[in-house]
Image (cartoon, rainbow, N blue to C red):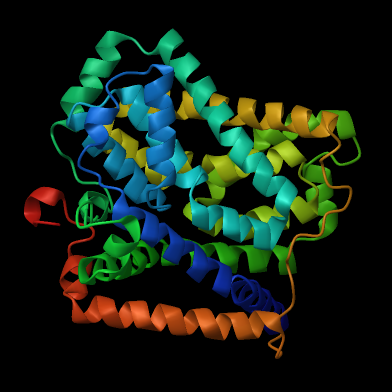
Length: 383
């Protein structure tokens, strides 16, 4: 028993070590983008569910934080300030599926085909969601959700969602980024984003290590119907979100789990559906209930699920037709080993970068903002 536990921790550590520098790079790039993209005008830019507004929501979401809880909180804030509800939900989906750090960690774990599939599938998923909302979201349900949202019931990461330190004035883009305010903003976004998702990342690595070490390959092959290839392609997008709901790991933390499932035999579309489903895990469904009421929470679960599974199936068909589905399953799920290879040197370089950003954060009032991360905006002034 002790040996199997140690092996699970060993595999979790190995995966964490492999993705250390990609994670730091991803969060640093995300911080740079957030430092020059203001939240202030978002609600004004999302007035309806026309294609232009939805495309704007996707772009704004891609420039936002990857934290699922922060994305959900910010989407409600936008809705309360006058943004169209459908556009706010599109923003929410983009915030967890089109951000830079997700692509980098997916490349490290899953390879370029699945990374490309994620970024092609996310807009398809949003498009399907818009169609579902237009067909089934009635005015009464929307008014009830708005009334509940305006009550301001607390969820999670609301202070983080409201934080806006972007530098929109002061010269060229480079001048703004390298100014005192710009460097401070980058450091704050970097640390706050890490603080918001580290539990999900750690939890995802530990669960992935346990599944890789303890669950035999035969179980996954049977569960994902590997011996029935055609049925497996249909079954994967259906069961992928259900596995995500049960495991309740969100944000980039579900990528190590996706690697284990991919190696275990889940279909190409199934692993994409699993990654999409971080916005319908049980804790977030409970937040939807608090934010919008029980009826809307149920509506969001059903429509999100349908859009996620449908988009994943479309991606499966497209990539299959183009011959882009990998023939071998070789996601990075490894035993622990730390040697003086390129991964170790890159980890050292990016850990130094992270240390410098943390130092800047600590010297510029960061801890006070960190304490307000889970508070509603009304309880503390975030700027």
